[in-house]
Amino acid sequence: MNDMSHGNPPAPKTGIVDPAIATSMSGLAFMHKLMNEELPAPPFSLTADVWPVEVEDGRVVFEGRPSERFYNPMGTIHGGWLSTLLDSAMGCAIHSHLPPGAGYTTVEMKVNFVRPAFAHTGPLRCEASLMHYGGRIATSEGRIIDGKGRLIAHGTETCMLLDTTRAAHA
Image (cartoon, rainbow, N blue to C red; front, side):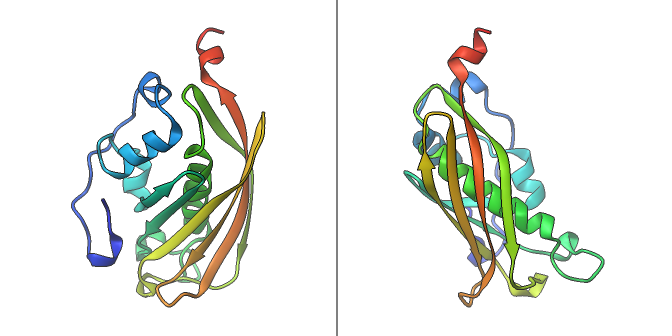
């Protein structure tokens, strides 16, 4: 597991999980395997330095380590990186509730930035929860908190639910 609060862990193996393997199990089982490094991490996680650290049905926590490589021209962490942390956690909160054979894709995301973050802010924690899971649409919400418990950003996400078994035969 990548506990960002204790220094830089060794980089996990990255790669693309075969969609047939990913959809053969529940979203919760998939997320546990991903978090426990039984499946390769998405290459983007390594690039963005955001990692799942807690997973349960409908709730996921990601941690990210802001660094100067994510600075914008104003000398603060770029809103796109904070959005990435939120999108990762909020999408995976939905993913953790998927039955086998289901998938999802983000269709809308809303973010409110309430406080700047810097490299010296230290690890940021993004807690996300499932708000609604329907037949075609799921929604989630997330909050990014710094090590002092201060709110950095919060958001909501809407995802379209997909039947991957039908898509594979189309």
